Image (cartoon, rainbow, N blue to C red; front, side, top):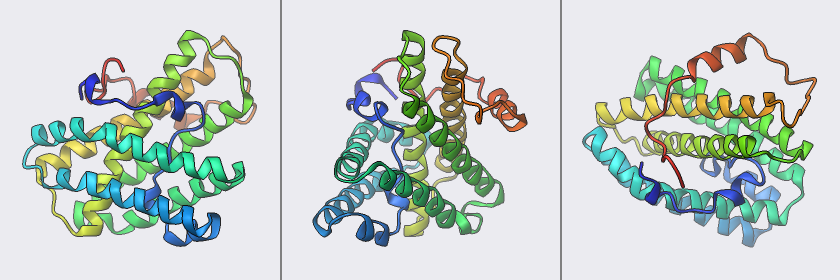
Length: 248
């Protein structure tokens, strides 16, 4: 993905928390949390996201998917940011947190039958990714709430982590849409999405952990200690990711 194709205001996203997948939210979540007019706008944005992603489902090779992704990701990120801005700008903080929880739960439910279409191994990757992204989201939210000043190093970790997070959601939304539409992905495209999905989620989590562990500043969360699961995720995320821009 070339840097020129990722033109969106990343700072507006990372100054808050990673974006959530609005496509995974049930419509009643909007109806109960937003006014009818705002809920309509967010749902329209969600439909536009799906329209942007639909051409990628019909790619006939990994290379074609990559080219379409480069053209589409910036638009996707802008739409996600617009939806998040509406929600966060018109509701209290706990509402966005509740929508995030419902989004992750919705993703797990949506992909509950993923093995039927994508296979057992693919379904395991998808559910692992969702769990990793939720873990990342919660850690980043705690760090943002702590409001410590950023160094150049932690600012870069934040930038890279949220970019990886947004890219992972992009791939998840492609799979969600394929599942909802009953679209059979080309085997090479499916393999590419699943590989990048796993790598992106791991890198997002690793960036958050590195930012948390950074000695300057010391964030000091007693409830965010390193455990065996963190170690597994950290080891798995040491490889370079080839689907991100080198710079923005």
